[in-house]
Length: 199
Image (tube, rainbow, N blue to C red):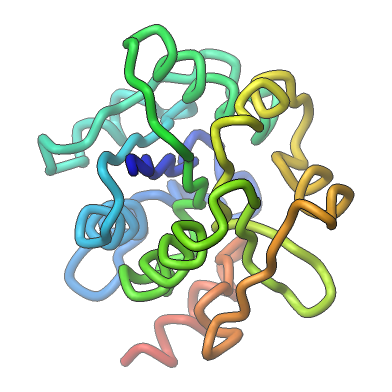
């Protein structure tokens, strides 16, 4: 069973005021931490979607085992990165059974949590496996191949959120052992709070 990770990292980080993907975290950056977690997991392959500041960020990605996708339409929102990834994978004639979509600004999502999602999916292969944010589902989430067509037609900046919260009969929620795992970092305040807790 081939599960590919797609890391969405194409945004401009306007609320952060600096390149969020390259913010220092531990001995690395947000993006590289996310890449390392994905590569350490049981996923078959890792794709990273870049857009804004493409050349600068690409230069900082140190692992050759990662496939980088350039999203030229990154200004159209999160959905455009999902579409870019699926188009790239289909054009390369790769044939994954599922995609695990995650964000580059959730540095606490580690390989253990990714593997937890993968284990759930392997036991429920027709089902979307989503992360539970209280009563709402979000990413990281695993989408079986039968949903690729729907994902490739997404629009706007909500990504797959609508799909994760409307088709509830086909979605299984995974609750992390700590809500902190799913914290996403959007502002300088978020970042300073994260670093304070990490020190």
